[in-house]
Length: 494
Image (cartoon, rainbow, N blue to C red; front, side, top):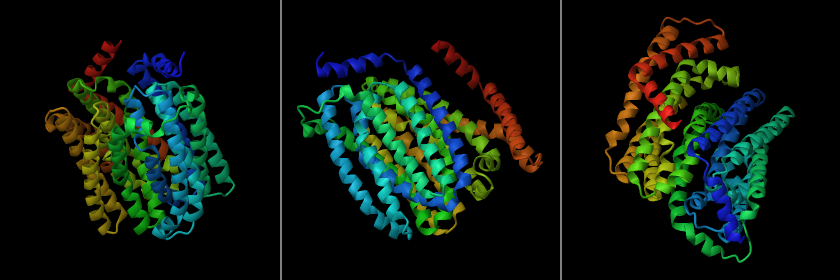
């Protein structure tokens, strides 16, 4: 078999895996990963202070930017362009090593302006150490894209769990020995190295560094990837400017508290829409020219994600105090109001999170770029207004409002611009679910916060009110007919 044939053979071998099976694999691995992360976080939160976490959160803002620069949209391009062969992958891999060297050197020297920005000299050695993860995240661009292209979700799932455990255990051991923030940095470094080694060993036969034409390989996906990279960079500022502002003007401790509250709200987003987003493009890209089918898939996911988001937001709002104390401990109690406020945006973040996969599948990364630009503008305006108050709680309210308003940009650029349907068609099911969610949480909320029926035991109250709220939620959505529709859909799937 020739070398191009090897790539096609690997692609066809795994191409028959169904969307449903892929989703189950990804859900299972993500569920295990989130569970492991929660356990590790619960341990580390008791070993490290809010200030140490705040320093790491400030550093993560910049490593996240370099992670976007490392990918440059090439990962999505590898998935979308099925005609890429072994030699193209080799050219892209060599390009990624060159890019990795440049970004690594840049990040080492970034320690000085970052230190000046946060007014913390500790960022200089931390940036030098974090450059390890910058390098390996960059060279991982190609092998990770190949795995997604070939729908190797079994490999990706096992890798996710194994590397999380490996990096997390090392972080805990280092934290126990007094390494502080450095233990968190080494967690990221070890994970990045492990993922690259795992990926490159898995796809090594699909990459050839012979007959290299690096510029040709890059040009093949440059236009598509450029819009994707542009969106990612813009979305970065939308997602991280809040951390920048809090770190610069409020200090490390408020940043640590805000970051912990923010991270808690992202776990369900990683678990549900994050999973769907990771598998959408490999499957739906086959329907690039069938806009109506893509629209129908989008609306199906919007309703399902809105319901899931309403349920999770209700739990977080009702049991925010208990959740923070159980997972983080008493020293993090100040982040409870921030967590509860941010939880109000979960339903909107859920329905927005699959936008990228839908527009990528439609081949409209140009619209994805514009949507990201509009969403970032909304976030920056509201963050500017919130920062003027000098109060981190009020700033968090503005962040939540920004997430809500960003939903309108998603409705405009996907439902209207990409598929030719009305904005109301996107927003109506979300609005209905919000109303039903409010009805479902009303009685548990009144019972807990107005009648004040609580045992005083954090864990017992948590279990009682989750059970109470779940019954109320199921009853409301059963009466509305959503449960019957879901069961009917599962029967059709069988």
